[in-house]
Amino acid sequence: MEVAFLAPTTNAGDSARVSVEAVVQSATKLPQTIAAQGPQSAAGFGVKMAAVASCTAAAVGLASSRKRSKTAARYTTQTILPSLAWIKSGVKASELQPKQLKALTLAGNDVLIGKTEAGALFCVGNLCPHIGTPMSEGADVIGDVIVCPLHGSSFKVTTGELLDWCVSPPIIGPLTGLIVEKKNLLVFEVRQGGLLGTGDVEVLVDTNAKKAYEAWYWKGLLDAQGKDDGTYY
Image 1 (cartoon, rainbow, N blue to C red):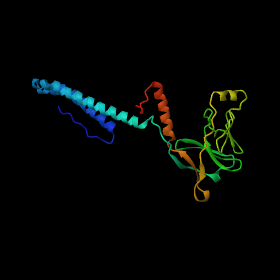
Image 2 (cartoon, rainbow, N blue to C red; image 1 turned 30 degrees about the vertical axis):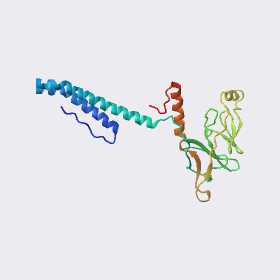
Image 3 (cartoon, rainbow, N blue to C red; image 1 turned 180 degrees about the vertical axis):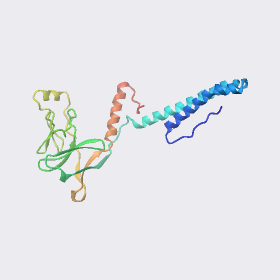
Image 4 (cartoon, rainbow, N blue to C red; image 1 turned 60 degrees about the horizontal axis):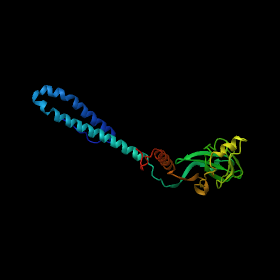
């Protein structure tokens, strides 16, 4: 009996699976080979079966190891540092009218580009810090203040400063505000690109924001189970 080991291919997982299949197929042919060769081959049967079992275990272990390595590389609970970069929004300031809002996702950040009543360009987080209501779904811009469409929380678009917290509807709005800590609205630096500001609006965002959120999520999940060892498997 011959056991052939396949050379690595571009897909390590596929190579490992093919190796296992080759070993299993060879093992199933052993009884037929022994019957054809006669009693003299029976003495080596145990040795050959031991070799087959060893090769199978090695191939399965390789596939499992590669799978864990791939998963570990994808998820982490390590601290992810910010990486700021100016990202083009694909929107020109001239396309926006005063009080108009445009929601976008830039490098994993939900942002809301708009203009004040006076026509000044601004960019804030699109999600209200109360319960994550999208501001783009009906928020009002009054002067340089933006008002959440759900519970009426209002914020300065220039600084994100909280002005009113969950003021509507009466009774219900204030009650919902009691269960969440008061927070300011996230504000992003914004500029007009191109010559003399004729290009796309550009926003300064953290390009690692999505990775940082995922790390925070997995850390919390694993901490709750007492399994946080720095990586997720």
